[in-house]
Image (tube, rainbow, N blue to C red; front, side):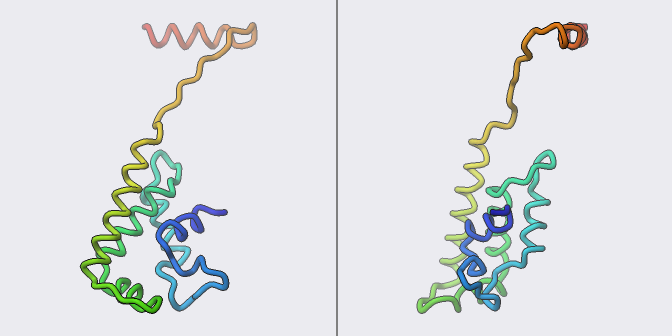
Length: 126
């Protein structure tokens, strides 16, 4: 699955239904890719941050909320939808903070990389 499809699933986009409901699509693939690009940290796309950004965009857009209200045989008030979108966005943003940002790796001392290890150590302690 692509990151775009993952975001569509996470935000409940009806485009993920088989067969796709094209007239009920919340965001196009290009729009979702934009969310992923904007929210990328260090050039790495994160589906949680992209999904949170998409949900916050939904909460801010009355036009898209009107689309959401027409899906299914039930109706929700706009205020309820905004609240739900923001709660889910907060859950995704909290999940982002649980992902380790930096990994530490130790090189094994071998004849091939001994000089590199010594040079790196000298630069750090200079």
